[in-house]
Amino acid sequence: MANAAPMTRSFLQVAATEEVASPLRVVQIEGLVILKIIKHCKEFSPALVTGQLLGLDVGSVLEVTNCFPFPIREEDEEIEADGANYQLEMMRCLREVNVDNNTVGWYQSTLLGSFQTVELIETFMNYQENIRRCVCIIYDPSRSNQGVLALKALKLSDSFMELYRSNNFSGEKLREKNLSWVDIFEEIPIKVSNSALISAFMTELEADTPVTQCDYDRLHLSTKPFMERNVEFLIECMDDLSMEQQKFQFYYRNLSRQQTQQQSWLQKRRAENIARKAAGEEPLPEEDSSNPIFKPVPEPSRLDSFLITNQISNYCNQINGVAGQSLNRLYLTKALHEN
Image 1 (cartoon, one colour):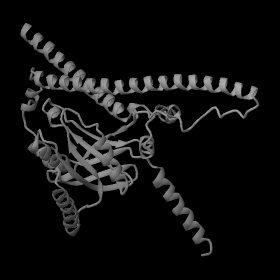
Image 2 (cartoon, helix red, strand yellow):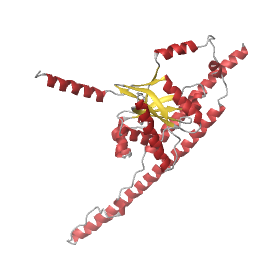
Image 3 (cartoon, one colour):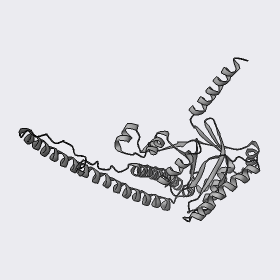
Image 4 (cartoon, one colour):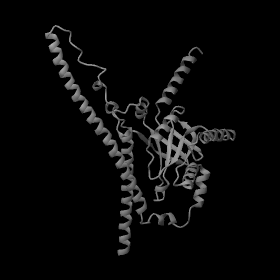
C-alpha cells in the first residue's frame, strides 16, 4: 500500500499531460443537430442568426449532441440581458431533462462566406475564457442553394490567440511569430454521426428510383445571381484592402520623414557639440526625448488587412468552384444536345 500513492500520482500526471497535449482533430456532429442548424438559418435568411452548441469534449474529438437558437439580437442593453437570461434558462431546462448541457461553442449563419470579421475573433476570445476548446460552426444558406452543404467548423489557431492577447500586430511581431493571414483560423474536419435506429429509418426512406429531384437540381445552369453577389463582395473587399494599404503607405511616409528630420537634427547637434568642446563647454546629449521628432510613429494594426485578405481568398475560391462546376454542366449539356 505504501507504493499506491506514488503510482496514483504518476497515473494522474500522465492523464493530465495527455489531456493537455491532445489537439482537436475532428468535430463529430449528430445529424439532428445539423438539421436544426439548417432549419434555423434558412428560416431567417438572409438575416444572420446564431445559436449555442452543446456536447462533450472527449480527447481529440469534440462531440456536438444538441443545440438551441439564440433570439435575434438587438442593440438595446435590456434586450441583450434578456438574451443572456434566455440562454441560462435554456441550459437549466436541458439539465433538468438530463440532456447534454455542456457548452462546446456556437453556430452562426453567413452570407456568401463573409464571416471573417473582428467580431468573430472577439466572440472566440470570450468563449476561450471559460471553455478550454470551442468551435464555431458556420453555415451558408446561399451556397447550399447551389447543391453544396456549406458547413464548416472553425477555431482560432493557438499562435494567433497568443498574439491577439498581446494586442500587438506590428510587422516585427508577426515576423517573430512567423504568422501570416492564413494562420488566423483553423478548419476542423466535420464527421456526421447518427444512431443505428436513425440510420435504419433513413434507409427505409430512400426512394426506389435511382434518380431523385436533388440530382436534377444539380443540372441547373444558371449561376448568375450567385456569381454577381460574389463579385460584388470581392470588389468591396478589394476597396477595403486598398484603403488599408493607403494607411500603411501614409505610415511609411511619416516614418521616412521622421528619420530624415532625426538625421538633420543629429547633424546639427553634433556640429554644436564640436563647437562647445572647442569652447571648453560640456557637450549636449545627442538624443532629446522631449523633442517630438524622437517620438515613435504608431504603426497601424495589420489585423484588418489580414482578415480582408482571408475574405478575398474565400470569395476567389467560391467563384473558382462555381465557375468550374458551371463549365462542366455547360459542356455536359452541349454533348447531350449534339447527341
